[in-house]
Length: 296
View 1 (cartoon, rainbow, N blue to C red):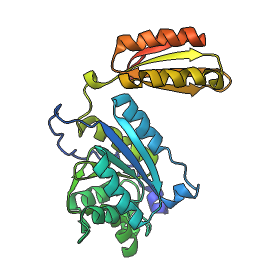
View 2: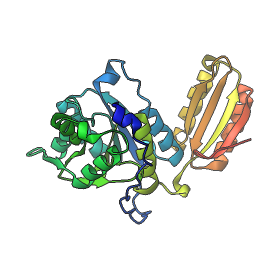
View 3: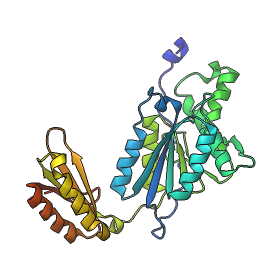
View 4: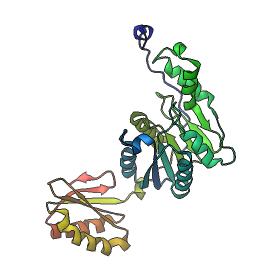
């Protein structure tokens, strides 16, 4: 930072106009999702991924089934293949990483080729460029950047053209969500930005499962070790699988196990929970709609 930058009083953050929020539709809502983490730095251990965990928790609370999480390299062929495959299979695909100003940030260009194999065209998005430079005024002296530095920065607004929508979902950020074919959304890898953009996007720009579609969950805690309860849970899952009920177990370090029962029939879940309590000498912990359980 130069002495000029240090002396300049901090400007209040600029609030940008948000992309209009579309009307809600209950006819077709997101039911399944996948997450694609892109970056050599995650694969070599230099960066710890927290974004997939944030997405997983959000999907769980919203009643969206997160079916897959993949981590791949900054490699065009891998990005193209994964983007195509996952978009065909899941209602929503969230990517994280690879959209910065450096040479290895190739997510935008690679995904452009995934959905436009003949040209893979990308171009500067003027509105995003304007927002980028306006946002930058409050952070540093733009006049001191070299032409090469400016070009590198502008790479972050070089978006796919075909099948792409640019959604400015957070008024306090210049960074948009780029959505491809209405299914795949491209997000930065920086956790603060990822979380802020994803939260705003999920809250306003997609059709979420209605409350009536969410399953119920009942939690039972037992002090028995997981190996002791495994035979019973295996038989229980086999017995109730045809009813659409999922049985899970989550060990607590040196403190027993939480047993989870998830399904659409609330009365049936409570019936099975009593069986679990009896067989495993357990106690009821919580019950209710998935993501909104209340302690018992």
